[in-house]
Amino acid sequence: MGLRRRPLSDLITSCNGVSIINANRNGRPVHFRELNAAIREAMELGSKRIVIENVTGQRYIAATASKKDLYIEVHGTPGNDLGAFLDGPTIEVFGNAQDMMGNTMNSGKIIVHGNAWDVTGLSARGGKMFIQGSSGYRVGIHMKEYGETRPYLVIGGTAKDHLGEYMAGGTILVLGIGSGAGSPVGLNIASGIHGGRIFVRGKVSEEQLGAGAMIAEIKDEERKEVEDLVKEFRTYFKVEVGDLEEMTMIVPASSRPFSGKYDKTNI
Image 1 (spheres, rainbow, N blue to C red):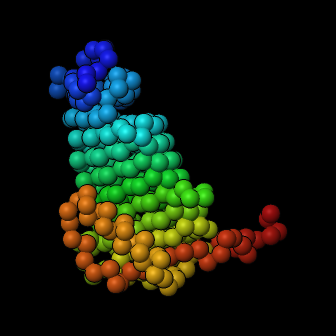
Image 2: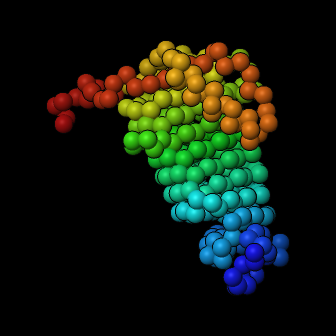
Image 3: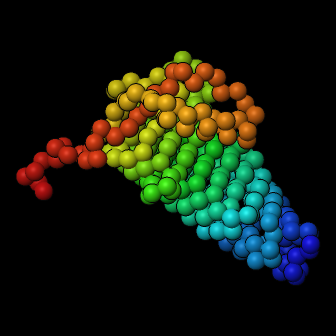
């Protein structure tokens, strides 16, 4: 079944419910506002699948998209805030993603066949993010959950300092594929955590933990959660993860991570 009308944007080629958008015109990247206007137009045309080619750092791709049955395929390197406030669609990136991917994401999936850099998953409230490669600094800051709604972030490689800072809910899993003998995560892990949990396949020392975080024993229910996430990760990326026995779980030491750490005379 064809689309309702011809697209107005010259960036769009549409047929049978699929829209192909070229993010490059005459050898130059189009402005992010024009690209995102074309994406919105393709959604309004009724496209169930949108393929975006030649992406070169354009920001806010698919921000606020909310059609549950929409699939967006991105080729290239999307800029900051890919999938910000996403609520339902699936985004699959064949390349790397820049900072703040999945910012305040509510539901849906983001799958990255590459790396995703700093502040990935900022304040995510739901949905799933799968990164085949590594991520940067301050990943998973203030992820949170409510009721049955929980965000999940799976990183195939490594994550740097301040992972899960101020985390209030959700699950982060770092698989450390190809990270060697050292720890796959940096310093100040889960500083200020008061909800959720972080799983790391590999070594994590007490010195790497931030204020309010502690290492806890993994129970059967939590191990099943890890196994399910790894199974889904392998479905997308067709890679071997390795032994899951050396898994560390980091959780809040209490619901008030900074209690007693302030000088009361200054409050």
